[in-house]
Amino acid sequence: AKLVRGGMQARLLRRSLVGTRGSVIGSRLFSSGEEITVTFVEDGEDVEATVRVGQSILEAAHENEIELEGACDAQLACSTCHVILPQEIYDGLEEPCEEEMDMLDLAIGVEDTSRLGCQVKISKDMNGMRIIVPQSLDLR
Image (cartoon, rainbow, N blue to C red; front, side, top):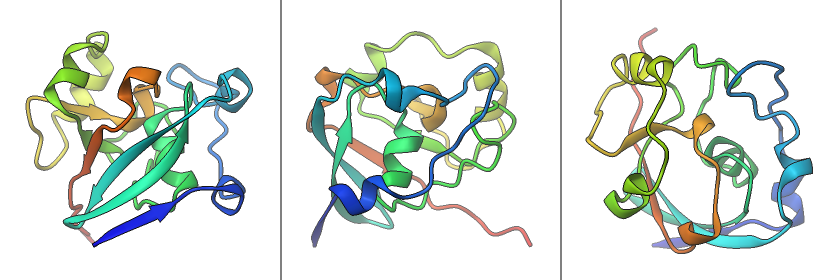
């Protein structure tokens, strides 16, 4: 099954606003306005989404109603926005910083191409990519 999400309604959904390193503040202001299509793989289901170049994967997920938590509001203090990227996309990104690596050490289901969604900005070359959202565990 394939769902398609995006558009004005999705763009009006919640937005994380934080003022620290790794922040997503203002990424909407600094995005190019150009949109691409990506596929989030959530609970084994492909969800096609329209996303803006320049926003973070975490923001794109929230705008498209993908369950990617981001509990720390992009402050590099959790691993709840852990995603798994295609190798060719991962290889083209800057290396994760030490803080991101520390948080990934705490994530469940980490793969060689795991990143935190709050730390990866959408670029044109990501058009068509598949982003795997690992299942999370409720530890309550």
